[in-house]
Length: 215
Image 1 (cartoon, rainbow, N blue to C red):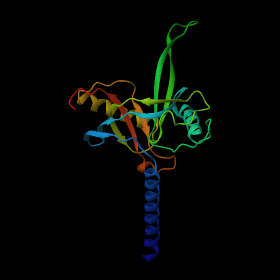
Image 2 (cartoon, one colour):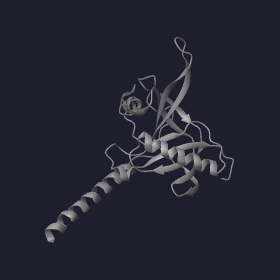
Image 3 (cartoon, one colour):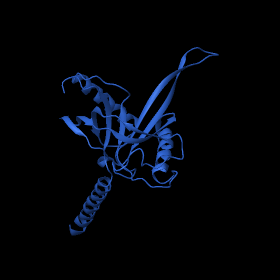
Image 4 (cartoon, rainbow, N blue to C red):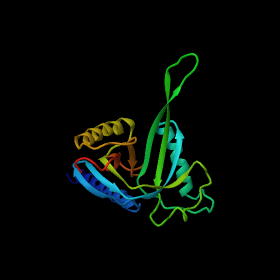
């Protein structure tokens, strides 16, 4: 019996160690402050103040577009800028996919969709637009994001298309139930490094809403 118990204890302690390390790593990243106006299970309505962000837009959608966008902005904060200054990583990293119709000419006249992915890193609060290092890659845009209200759903697991789409639908129902007016495309927000275990991941969908309604 003792031989069987010891491995289980070791596994338990190993799992606890991974939990502590992962949460400690996440705690080191600065996150924009926000006020929770309402909480209902996994749903929240939040007010965010204005913050400074670095943003890039790339063609396409899905993992390949996300990897390309992440590489561009990560390069900027890791020192690929005019002053070669490293900027601290923050959370979350957000991405949004928008589509525009492009008319086809010959041989057919139906429209097709062109997808664009926008990825955003929020800059540490000790920076201003004047003190942030200048990007070398001119695709990177530094700007102030205006204060806004978001309806949010939080979920764990892998942030694959199926999981994100399902929670976008759930958030849409929540927004409608609160009689809120959605605006813009939903934003996907990710908080964890790639090695984080699925059940420990913090993923969110943000839907910008107006301040009217029940809240």
